[in-house]
Length: 418
Image 1 (cartoon, helix red, strand yellow):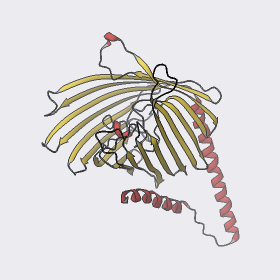
Image 2 (tube, one colour):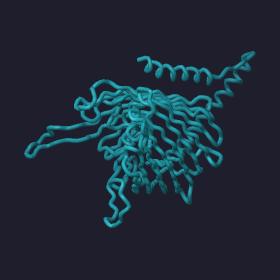
Image 3 (cartoon, one colour):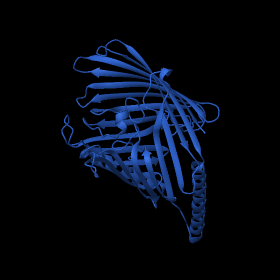
Image 4 (cartoon, one colour):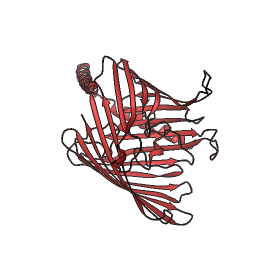
């Protein structure tokens, strides 16, 4: 409870401080000075509003253009350690494609294909692609959209209780807002169902229900998230926030989770997790981003960013651990170029980026658990293409025996976005 109160009061305090700092203070000596200052301030706000509308219009126009994305990922994994047996290496590859046709009125479509699994490099069987993401989206108003089909989503800000990055789910995604700072998003998906022969009704089913509501003031956002039903009877809720202040950005999330009643290996009690990150140092061409996290044993929602920590698509924190994740990032040209990680949207990165990351975790008994040492680079190529490389070395500790084991993951990704 004490941790939850701290996680809630910290962003509220910073938000109040930000609002106080951003409030203009006018020193006036008479009514004429006051009127002139008021007119100047009104003109400034009008100009800011015009610029924002122009940027929103350009962004909307860009989003309406047809897009085609292609991504090829080649991976090499080497495993060695006293309990791993003989050292071994594995080669694998993955292909992803995405097509977003030009919208027709308020209707837009999107289709994604990928290899069914990480295939060994063996062309004797050919190369098969399966449908990954396929959905139709309608936008009756600028602040309402609804998508149906095979969808991906990250509901809460850091995805602790609702992030299905691993595989698309068949369902609905409804977004409302932000309208006057207030917004909401609801997710429904059918996970499984059983219909016995000769029967008209589904006797067994498993549905996914999740909801997010938030307040967005631009530089400050606060959100509440509820997982009403995950796999079987799992449930959860989370509070999250975002704050931009003095050129820095803070993102945090505090979550509670209750495993399924059919979970035979964990007691059905509420578990908690929190993660907070901030760019501690930031310059024109470099930044130091640090995340802190603490995840209880058994905190393992079916759709969570924590489940993909081995691959590192989102968070590197494991359940039953606490620790720190520090990333030093260089942009090799003036201007921010984002991260060196490949993403599912095939976003083009016009600036070369290099990253060095260290993750140190210990278990709830304060014993060393894992360490990760990671190096990445992203290079822009011709057109709108990027070449990305990553090398990750993972060290696992076994406190009972004092033994350690190592895993080395090397991946090379090529992305192009038309």
